Amino acid sequence: MVSFLLACSRAGQETTPGATATATSAKPVEAPTVVSSARLQLPDYIDRSSLGKELFVFNWGDYIDPEVVADFERLTGVKVTIDTYETNEQAIAKLQQGGISYDVVVPTDYAVQILIGLGLLEPLDRSVVRAIEHLDPNNLNGPYDPGNQYSVPYFWGTSGYAYDTAVLGEGLESWGSLFNPPEAARGKVVMHGYYRETIAAALLWLGYPLNETSDEALARALEVLKAQKPYVLTYTSENNAQLLVAGEAVMAHCWTGQAILAKRERPTIRYVIPKEGCAVWQDNLCVVKNAPNRYTAMVFIDFLCWPEIAARNAAYVGYASPNRSAREQGLLDPDLVNDPAIYLDEETWKRLQWFRDLGPDYVKYDRIWTELRAG
Image (cartoon, rainbow, N blue to C red; front, side, top):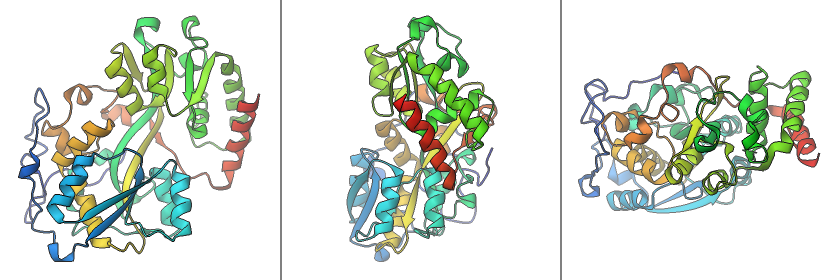
């Protein structure tokens, strides 16, 4: 679907951190390999004298392992301060307003595109952000930032649905099961609380692209969603996993990480990427335009791409890591790595679609969502 650099070290340059095994020779092990914090060292290409004393990160809540942050502070002597936001729109608005000087921000794919257009991001310094080579080519060179000039993939996932096989059995593969659910699921279906996700699911089931904006397609999608509404327990993006675990819901439109969390507590949960396709999303590490600690921000982003750091961070956050070297060196949870709905094969990638900025057509989606929720 997308392509970029191979996840291996470049000949003739310093080996990027953690590159002790190549993409062709590494094999997964039976359990994740634990890398001691004491073994971590800054690579030679990092200039300590250029590091600032502080770093200000603007991130989603609870979206980085505190121990990873502590290791960065120990290695560099830099004090890291993290502020949080709840939506991409909130982050964009705050960066536009100014007043607070952030160094690093973590926007989702389409928000990267918006921030680039607003001139709010710094180009990456590839002489510093070398560990990007550890990332999977499928996660690089996305349509929102071709060539990854401004962004480095952080965590990613898909927006399919999870269901309890103990109640509904095996074999559900289509969005149709969500929009025309089995009798046992009626009244126990959770739909996404983010309107683009929910409308996209209806569009995909009808055979349209998920970024479709034609009046005809959106009217048909609204009809589908209205017909489904009597079967819906709630529309939420917050507690999808908890509702599945508690048994209040038996089907839930959700992000990958929510399905992972639910399956940990209720092993009969199965996550599905529907045969019609679904959305792929990716949060990214970016440097804010005119960041007061620009060099330190680049070093921080490079650090988060080291395989051992990426693996520890993934274990804490619970989402899929784009770090292919971490996967191939056996640093990630094998139960997740071996789940074809979490770490995808090439054929599955072909069924995925990225959200794009809809521009003025957002108003159409707002109208549909308002009518659906009010009806």
